[in-house]
Amino acid sequence: MNWQHLTYFLVIAKHENFSRAAEQLYITPSALSKAIHALEAELGFPLFERQGRNSVLTDYGKTFSKYVSQASDSIESGLRVIHEQMDVSTGRINISGIYTMCADYLPRQIAQFHKLYPKVTFSMEYQITSEVLDSVLKGASDLGFCGDYELDDESFAEIDRILLKKEELIVIVPKNHRMAQNYYVDFRELKDEDFIIYRNVNSGISFCFWDICKKANINPHIIFEVPDDHTIIGLVSAGLGIALIADSPSLKMGDISTLHFKEDAPYRNQYMVWNKNRFTPPVVKAFREYIINNK
View (tube, rainbow, N blue to C red):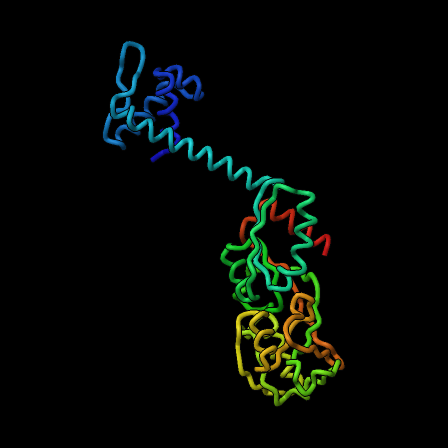
């Protein structure tokens, strides 16, 4: 059904006159008449009937006009909402990020951005790196803030990224662990330990963990694979194993001790990512540029 013809229908219903309606629509009366005849043929009922020089709605036309008017109002409302979303000063930004970014980094950045654009709203969801990437690829998140992943993996070809920061990786052990009083650790000393790791091995800290094990020639014994930072800290606190995590204030909790690498301390990269093949609303572009300029 041609929306333009429906618009013509509403204008004629308002003026009850084809000539005046054609004048408002900047088309000829004959073209307008042809469009309405086509619409009536498609609908299967007459919309107008002649009364002298005027064209008034039939009973069918009166009923139909109510619904067309409602549809027109809904479309206008939708366009207004979209224009508001397109406005840098009033839009909405959907973000997903790993825990340390959501807990430490992003709140400070959003607070500063909010001073510039106080009407912009945010939705922020904590996810592991693999979920952040998936959310960005599917368009559920406008921007993602994640850790390391296989940069050359074809499944991430649509992902664009910028490196924001690096975080040192440390080992956490229970307070009663044999090395709990140490400050430094040689990772090779941990070859017989029970490790607790993040579930997805292709991204995040697990991506770094396996690389560290390979360089240290360690075949680690994995006792737990878990989805998030808090579960890892809880299990380590309970004495059920040790783990590799980021050296972040937000993760230093529970009954644990931290060990730093004696030499060649490993780091994880933290990226801002977005889908380069999806339309980027102006407000998202503005926040992305703000992050880049203030990283």
